[in-house]
Amino acid sequence: MSLDLSKVAGQVTGMVAQLKEGNAGRLERLDFALKAMSNVDFDKLSRKVANSRTTWLVAGLVDSLAKTSPALLRPADFTVLATDGSQIDVDRHQAARCFLINIGSVLLKYGTSPDARLESFPRLYSGDKDMVIAPASMRDREQAIEGTLLGIKRSVDECARLAEMGERLPENSKVLALLDGSLILWGLVGRDYPDFVIETFLDKGILVHLDRMQKLNETRQFTLASYISFPRSSDVANVLRIAVCPHEIVDTDKYCSVCDNRVCDKLAGVQDRDLFESLLQQGERSAMFYSTSSIVKKYGGHLVHFFYLKSDEEIARVEIPEWVAKNPALLDLTHSLVLDQCRLGQGYPVALSEAHEQAVVTGADRENFWQLVESLMVTGHLPATGSIKSQSKRTRWI
View 1 (tube, helix red, strand yellow):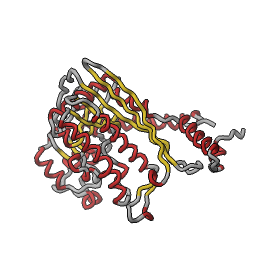
View 2 (cartoon, helix red, strand yellow; view 1 turned 90 degrees about the vertical axis):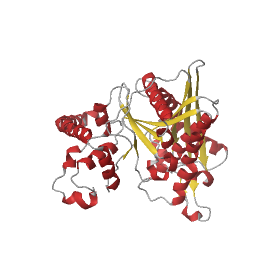
View 3 (tube, rainbow, N blue to C red; view 1 turned 60 degrees about the horizontal axis):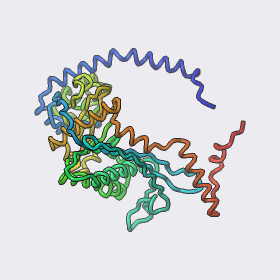
């Protein structure tokens, strides 16, 4: 039976009324945030941020908060690469223990010799060698790749495919490589994974492929960015919470519970995109920031920086590795080509849209995949019966 919307319509109406009632307060908090941003002393704030200890994530400062930069003209000839991925996770109700990752890739060449290549690369993983991570000397500590870890593996595979595509391009190319979502492996944050798991996905995983892409700049102008549409982050807004705090050194564990002058509450609910929607003109990028996440501190020379971009349709967060952030030519190339891709894609980078179309695995695809697995197991004279629950879902009782 499908969802009965008539039974939830009244609840939705109540939610909308609450949102409308809170909108005036949100605008007041945003106005306070913008005034705070315009009044900060950058050097003083930088020292205060560096000395603070907070329970919430605060952006690292590189430029003045209110700095903006217009996009430069795009080059005449350039290439845009993009990858995206989807997966079929392990299903304990199926007879075969396996998972599948499908990577979609796109190459769009612009200029005097335009070209386009759209491909998908599905790969099946089965058996302990593919599906388990374990230190060489301690097999009893093995970690299964499923759920969150499978999502992390997919992100690493997307990055690997980008590096491979870049290495095949001719020398002297101007190239933008795009990923969807964050460069930060957030799935490794706040979880008690053993060191060998982090090493597998970080040191022997994504950082290897970031090294490969950085090396491409020896013979090409190659830049990498990840695009986050409609971001919900508040790293920069949290900088303003530190700025308005009356304490010289902010320590949330020490002071917040006993503070009688919580000026920072006037910034509650303000998100970064709210700030830059007001601050940026169309096509402009914000000041540069860097992530202070615990996992990013392990990225070495690929420390994740980010800026906000105002396209014709939305405020987006664009993340880049440090070697792009510190190279003015690569930074300007990233800005101009990401903006151009958004305009070609009606607000969202067209290369990423096409990569998603190549990668997407629908509900019907999943059902067909498991039916194929079951059929071939039967053909191979293997037990192919899954759980009773799985069989029940395929049966219409009424």
